[in-house]
Image 1 (cartoon, rainbow, N blue to C red):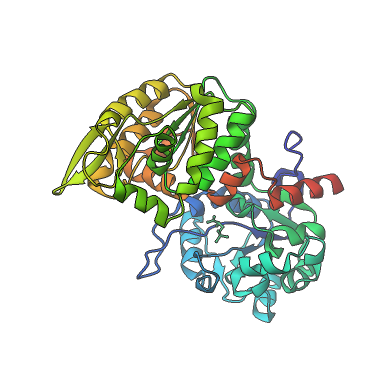
Image 2 (cartoon, helix red, strand yellow; image 1 turned 180 degrees about the vertical axis):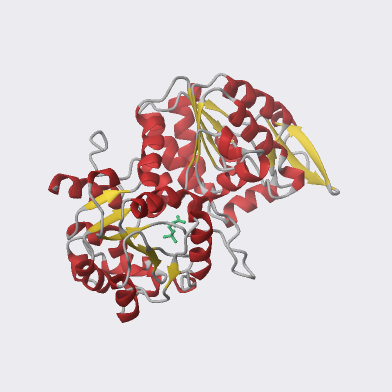
Length: 419
Ligand code: 3PG
């Protein structure tokens, strides 16, 4: 793809060739049964896999299933293989070995047009994030890692379709590109293009709806999209909206303030004040909030705050109406982070109303981040058809929109120059 300066899967001939395909099918799991409960990433990995198989490739699939802690990353991918097989309409075998003798034998035995899913790459120490952070290998050094040494000699091409893991500097993500002709998969190209569209060339007015509890993510993106001019308006919600109001001198009472302190979120008040001083006209912040009293939802305006010693867990009806009006006239809308604690029926109103407003707006709409995608699929009927793009990525997308150069994109660009 010339404008992204990376190779795509259409740039090579795969008939009878062996391809190592890295996908991100790291999926939300039920905490007790460990069954997959969300298939967005599995669905989106199908087009590349199908295309490679249709082109006669023998495909060895690498993937991870993670958790917040490295030692929880040891979940086998058998269920992932079953779901891939069902969606593809042909069996994908699973081998619970990443790169040892069993994995190698399975790859060598592949006929053209068939695929095998190898064990969770994070069985290997060199693939986990503590290794990445402590040892800090360069992609060039990763050529000597176990995974690349064992598998690269068996393959003709490397394809990466794992944009959601693009921020990980690990052998499965960036090592193979050093030694094999390399391309980006369909899902990766689509997601990078969707994010490029909102950053580089958005239809105006361009509106960013940023909420949730992950303020450092929201603030990284806010800084970048304000400085580079991508955002005409930023609508804030969730704790991000509360911090913006505190920065303007609003008090929310002891309980809310303690909540922020306990999570070290009060450190964002000062940067919020700086944003407001420099870019006041571009922010649209909540003017009312909802909290719980005796099991019911109660709303109050900024002027009435703090009414009870409460946690404010949603935006109020006045804010919803103001945001709906901005969204209806937007040329581009990017949304990341819910408006409130939408998992609780008392506080889903804000997120439901805003997500549906985005879904029905004529503007080009992109939803990003795990929570926001879950909110889209649970609160918007037929979400897939209503949003222009639903991202697979969380951390990678936030970094991309914060202006960080992602290791995977760097590796794909380097590989493009080589061919
Ligand atoms: C993600 O869910 O963001 C990607 O799959 C990367 O997973 P990780 O954060 O566990 O590395």
